[in-house]
Length: 603
Ligand SMILES: Nc1ncnc2c1ncn2[C@@H]1O[C@H](COP(=O)(O)OP(=O)(O)OP(=O)(O)O)[C@@H](O)[C@H]1O
Image (cartoon, rainbow, N blue to C red; front, side):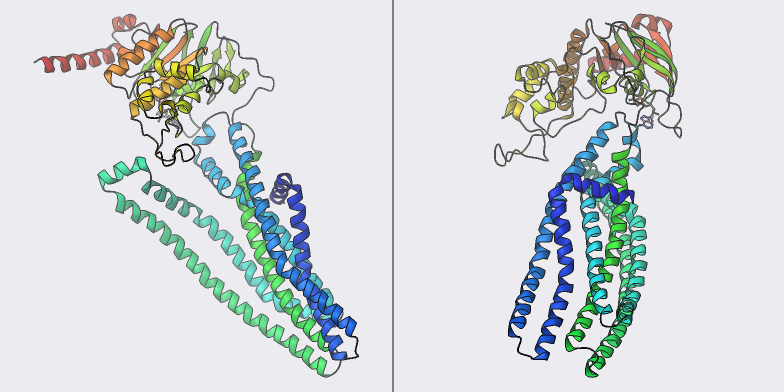
């Protein structure tokens, strides 16, 4: 019921006028067959009576023609309004869905496969479902009106007649209900299989996957796995189709037998003079009308049941609250003056996952640069994500000038942070837009965009492209509206990385700059340039830098070494080297690697 209310509410909000017109047209359309049957009966009776009431005959015939015309035209009008309504509902539904996903300020939801699956289903069906539910509900209403109209007509002829007609439709009713249940069950059973098929389908046309698929020759293997999923779906659907034929043919035979009996009775009654010829035509029309209405009713019920199950995904996302607790009265985020402190932070991605951070404590003083160092999987990027409040610690706290991050509005907190993540984004947009997304307020200011690109070492290759900053960086879209057929340009990994850095620079004077492997894809010269630029940029600013190339972080004011989720060493480069611990070991082996490389080249 909640689902129906939700779907109807959404439709009403999308367009009241369309909804009202749709309701009225559907109900009028439902009444036309009953009106036609009555007009036909009246006409036949007038003709059989043959008492010369020409005016009445003409009047009835003209009315019949007009109603028949309505019956012919109305379905198209209903269809048209339905499509318009569906478009409007689709737009509102999509907007509400993505507005709801935006409310999830953290990342945990997006890493939950059940949630991701739900969003996909909601996306696929959320827009169409309200429209389908409304049209199905109306169709249900319309068919009920139609069936009741015919049954009421029959009561006038004989009280038992409507019962007989309903009985004739019963086998079809029972059969269709059974089929509807099986269809809904099959839909759920096949959902994961179809999703797997979709995954393989997407993989086989994905440009990123294409390289490996060709190199490893896995194309036919993946195609085989995709076809196996389709075969499973086809097999199950064919089984249901066979059951459908058996049930529908069986019900059809029983229904036809029943209907035939009632018709025979009415013919004999007409011969005996107990009912008129017009009544016989009314009985025939009523039997067909009631049976059609009952079948449509059952199919509508089955369909709306399925649509409502799908709409549940949409409603659950739209109706769910924030994923991270948001303070009822958030503290305004102050400009960073003292620093950031991780205080005994414990964190795991979920209760099913192992602890990733186990009692981490360290402080980043305001105006200083912190280097985070550690082996793969030590927990460095996780610390950054907690710092941006993508997750909350399970125990302990991250403090900004002594205030727990949980006291702030996460959106406001993030306004004070600039960042380049390890898995930064490449947007299929123009070069200027790729940089501009770093700060939408500055995005229109070409001078600032260029300055950020210069600082990140991106201006050279961007300016060299035919359309400069207006070049579309994509092989997916093209600027059809700007230059017909102008294909996008694909950048190298290092060039994309510089754009990501430019994006962070455009954010300019944020209180905290976070750089997670900002130079991993750069050539040696570019890396040197980027780090010199960063060093300049960092002066007097608070920054956190993660890098496996220890040469890039050695001059940080404080180095924190993380191992298996705990801080194992901290100090300056000199202090850590003197300590002879993990950092000293890592630094020495990297330096020796370079040294060895150099002596091999020299030798
Ligand atoms: N979203 C996630 N869900 C579950 N576990 C995760 C998730 N992200 C990271 N982990 C796990 O947390 C641990 C720490 O990962 P993290 O990315 O913080 O390490 P890192 O020190 O940045 O590693 P690297 O140097 O390889 O980037 C790893 O064991 C990883 O498998």
